[in-house]
Image (tube, rainbow, N blue to C red; front, side, top):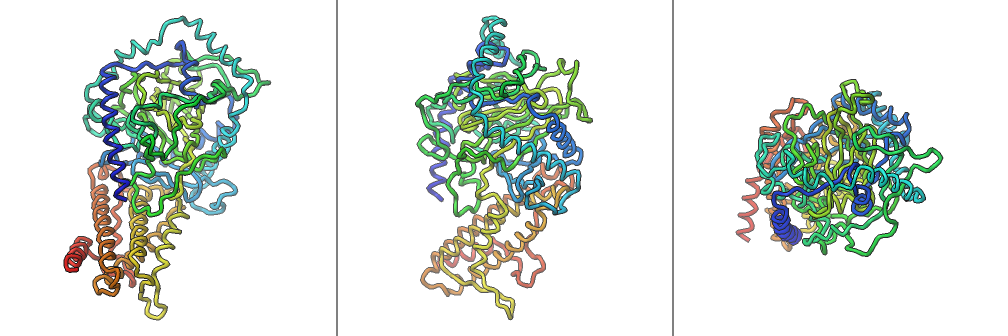
Length: 635
C-alpha cells in the first residue's frame, strides 16, 4: 500500500546517502582482490567467503558431464537460448547473455520486471510425463538438466560432512602459497592501473554512456545474475538494501563451511593443487566450525533496511495477498535452473569490472533474486572452444583466459574481493546466507561458456497453480444465467470489488502481458504453456465483464451504502490499469523491441474486441475513468 511505497522511498534515500559516502571514501582507488596464486587467498576464503564451495570437474561422474554438456549444446543448436529484454531504470535493455528457464512444470522465475516461463524438465515422475509438448531431443536435453539438478540437491544437502580433511587441504594450499613468496597481493597496487579501472564514462552495448560514479550505484535493488553489463547494470553496493544496515555492518562476516570438492590438476595458471586420495571423502570443509556472535541478517527485516526484490511494491502488480518470505529449512530442492550462454567473441563492448580491476564482465555485480531466503545456489560451468562443443582440453587451453567468478562482501570497500577461476565442468555452490551478505559477478574468458544456475525460486505467487486459484477466487463472484448466458454479480461489497480488481490486474500484467511480451517465443520449442495461457486469457475476459458490471452497479446507484467507496476503489484500479497498459504498449513499440525477428518480437495482444458473445464491446479506459471521476464529483 501507500505506507509500503513510502517506506521503500525512505530506504532508497538512505541508501543513496550511504552510496555517496562510500564512493567518496573509495575515490579513484581500486579495492584489492585475491586469486588462488596470491598469499592469503585461503585465509580470505575461510574468513570472509566461507559460504562458497567449489566442486572440481573431476569429482562429477563422467557420464553426467557428457549428458549435461550434450544437452546444453542441443538447446543452443535448437535456438532455445535467447537474450531477454529486461527493465532497468524504467527503460528496456538487452541482457548480455542468452538464456532459457527449465524447471518444475508450471513454475516461473521473475527478475528485472521480467517473468520467465519454465520449459518443464521432463522427469519420470513429473506431471508432464507422456505429454507431447516438445520433440524427443529437447525432452532428452531437459531430462539431462533434471539429472544434474537431482545431483545438486543431494550433493548440497551433504556438504556439512568431511570435516576431518580440513587441515590436510588447508596446509597443502598454504604450503604452495608460501613457496610463491611473501609479496602482498599484486592486485592491491597493479589493479589500480588496470585499463578497466578508470572512472570515465563508458559507452554501453545499448549505446548508453554512463558514469561509474554517477549512475552505476543508483540502480534499484533488483539486479540478478541476469543483469546487463553492457548497459551499466551492476547491482554493486546499492543492492544491499535488503542485506545490511546503512552503516554497512555486513563486513562482519559469519564464517561457516567453505570447501573445495574433488581436487584435480588445475588447468588455469596459478590454480594447481594435488589430487585428494580416492579413499577419502570428496567433501572438504575449509572454514571455521562455529559462528561468532554478530549482526543477524534476516531477509525481509526492516531493522537493517532490508527490502526484498520480490516484495517491491513498485514492481509487482496486483498481489493483494503477499505471502511471508519463505526460509530455507535445510531441505534442498532446486525447482528451476536458469541456463546462460555467451560467446565473448560476439560481444564487442563488454564492460570492465570497475572497482577491483578484475577484467571484463559477462554479468555484473549482483545478488541472485527471487529466491527462498538463505537457500543455496548451485552453478555448473561449461566452456568450449568451438561450435562443435569441444571442451578445450589440451595444450591450447593454457593459452586461453579462464572464465572466473568474482565475489565481494556487500556494503564493504575494505575487505578484499575474491576471484575464483573455473575450469570447464567445475561447479560452485553459494551456501547459507552468502547470496544475501555478498555479491558476485561473472568474468569472461576466451571460450564460449554455458552455465546452469540451479535455484530454489520463491514461487508462492509464481506458479500456474497459484494464478489459476486466484482466477477462481475472482470468478466465484460471477454468476452466469443458464438460460440467457448473461452474467451478474453475486456480491457488491467494496472489499469484494477491490479483491477482484487486484486479481484482474495481476492476471493481466504479471502473467498475460509478460507472456505475450516474451514468454510466447518459446512456444515454437515447447507448447506446454500454450493451453494454460489461452485459458488464462478467457478468465481475464470474464474479469473484464465483471469490471463492467461493477461500473454499471456504481452508475445506477444499486449499492447505495457503499457506492462512494466502490467508485473510489474502481477509479484506483482503472487508473492503475490504464497506466500499466500504456507502459506495456510503449515497451512493445520500443526501438529495441522492433529490432527483434518476428518470431521473438513482443506482442501487444489485442485483448479487446475478441469475438465473444459474452464479452462487452471494447471500451476506452480513459473515458471510463473520466466518467467515474465525474460521478464522484457529483456525490
